Length: 262
Image (cartoon, rainbow, N blue to C red; front, top):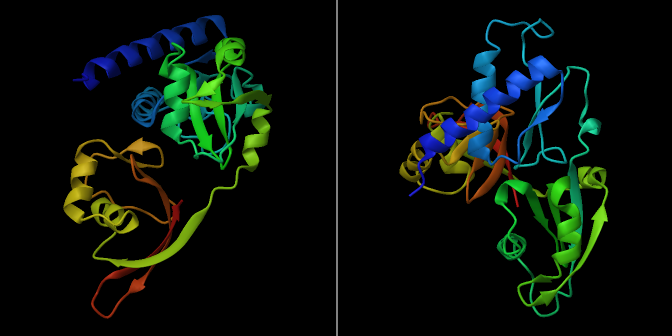
């Protein structure tokens, strides 16, 4: 069984080391790819370190999270100068993995299992975007040559691998359903229950188990009030955005409009 507290402590010790080097050597420092829980842990830690510092004030830690394209789920944390932009992140690469899908369509699990089967650590791999007859994989530049030379099969399917510009993933068009519902209130368990068609008790359980994220931060309170514009993730189920909080219904329930990504 994983010891989350121990893993988080090790991660934050590495962040402390990064901060020391960043402050003393004026270098850009970067983590490996972080999952959503790790990102939340790191972001909460950095926000605490910056408490009391104004933007641009000496002593404030300048950091960005970036995973190759806007909205990436797996990201790296960069400690850098305030004027830097995402165009300066040259250590994230993207490959396109194409195959013949007439036999069957490959899944996210297929792509991930095959690339990890090469002996690559998960922390070196970012998001995997699955298409009809291809997949895009974000990865660390340090393993790019190895992957190009060794990644030739996904399961039993032969694949063709080519480098693509990371910038091209910015045009990735996420599809969503535009939905309306009513909720008793805008507390987190109600909103998650509505967005992902699960019971309120299961939504509350998911929050308590660290599976729900609001604007990339892990939620721990079932009664947290969700606001219009908040981006919600239920791990294992998907993503949604609360677009609008409307008026009350005749029964006193609140109308909400949200986008659930497909």
